[in-house]
Length: 122
Image (cartoon, rainbow, N blue to C red):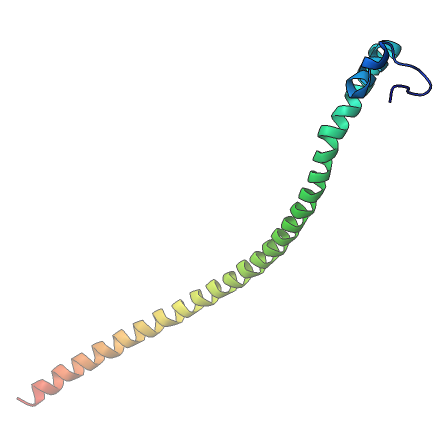
């Protein structure tokens, strides 16, 4: 690693290894090399692993979103059916109110008939 692309790094043999390469590019290419190497190091150490993790997260999020869409559709159908049930219960309540009124009239008639029959028996 002491020679890169045919160039010998300045500083001799002590300029080997990762930091030697960085030092070589920094002294040979100047601040552009530092910026480029920094960008590459950041990309491979931070950005690339995060992109891989976000791809996995995205598939999970898409699966959750699909399940939520299905659930929303199901809840919409349930709400429609509950609306129909409520309308039927309103009609049933009206019929039961009429039946109650009729039963109250029949009960009143039976009470008055009972009172008259008691009066006849005396």
